[in-house]
Image 1 (cartoon, rainbow over the protein chains, first blue to last red):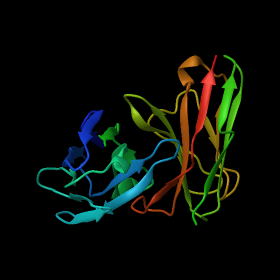
Image 2 (spheres, rainbow over the protein chains, first blue to last red):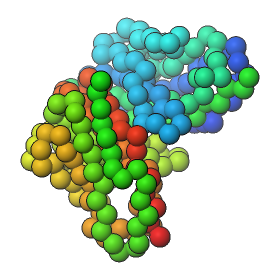
Image 3 (cartoon, rainbow over the protein chains, first blue to last red):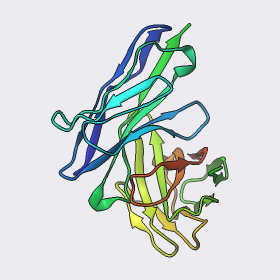
Length: 113
Length: 113
């Protein structure tokens, strides 16, 4: 079936360092890929989405490229800030069952000042 | 602004009791979802709906029922609550076709004792 696997956390970084959260997916369909972010006490919210293969999405300094050949969608940021501390979810939806959105297990990021 | 409201925000239930979690959305979205969030498992889909009167099983439906009496409302029902159902539950809504943004509520923390 369809699935998403991402870096297990927690990930602890110092402010100003770079971030990579790995995400790989499995599906036999044509997915749209998403990154969501969840701050404490809140529900997840969309960071960005990429509906087409080999395109890049970005928001708030975060970016990810939909790599169809490698079935990957790694999240990157060049310089993290303390306010980036949150849980990050990779997710996908597929054309033939477009009502389902499948999430990875989440990666908890702690950024130290 | 898109809004998904869950009630109650916190609930303590006794084993074997009936629990109903309610969700209301003012987005006029066709699709609604119930997820549970647990450490080590991330977000897992319990039930979803693509319109009033419809409910579909997600990935972990056992022990849960759902009800969608109207476009705006989607309930999750635990007929016989068990301690293993202690979790944080999130309701979400989405416009359709799965490849559009999904909006989450703030979550309901359920403890079954």
